[in-house]
Image (cartoon, rainbow, N blue to C red; front, side, top):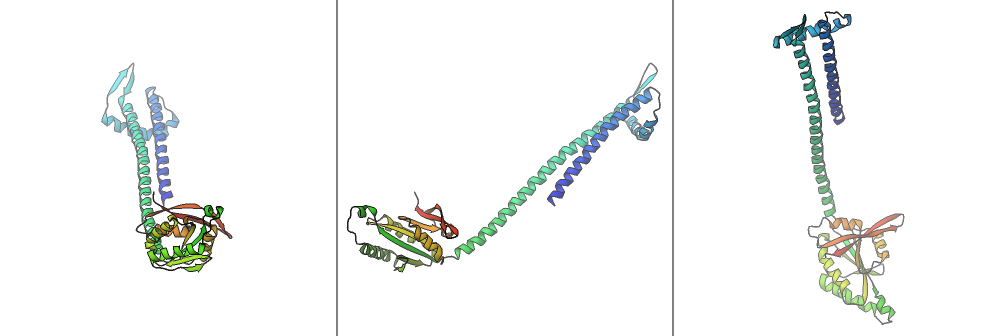
Length: 283
């Protein structure tokens, strides 16, 4: 429909341009007709236009009928009036052409405005749909892996890793009231309210920033995508809280977001890739 409307404006302007050419042609022919009458001659090919010009001259004569005579030559102002009338028609047609551009621009602007409004409505519908779907995702897993900090290893300081892990588990249990299960040589916690993940992150960042001799690699994954979770674990981003893109995307729909997310990179995951993000404390 839009293309047909634009073609309609284009056709209208082409027609108006043709009429302008006709007006110029008529003025030229009227001048010749006037010259023919001044010299009292008869041009056969002019008979084709004589009926139209005679009618036009009769009308212009009714408007202004002054005549002047010089050396037996009669100058009738009705010819000038007729030329002026044709020129006025030419100007009106030119105004219509310019008006058609204005109308086309107005139509185009209105169409774009309507289209943007429709897109905003559609985007809002899609956003609400995605938000509803995302907010239904509440189950997520947190997996923690630990290692002795390289500083203590290089200095050959004896650190009991199992004891330090017990202290970490006890600290988290004291804060959150949950116990982990073994998973991929680490500790897995499962939670059922992603909207309250900030409370969990508060504790996890305290674990990372604690004055212990351990480094912590913490991975978070929504739902039960174990393959993706195992890939996150294998990357071993110590002293970071990492997650895949789907987990980061889900966080956008939380009502409260006390933490920022940023992309760490894209990594190979079998035949596919995994986009890894991290939670960061707001500066």
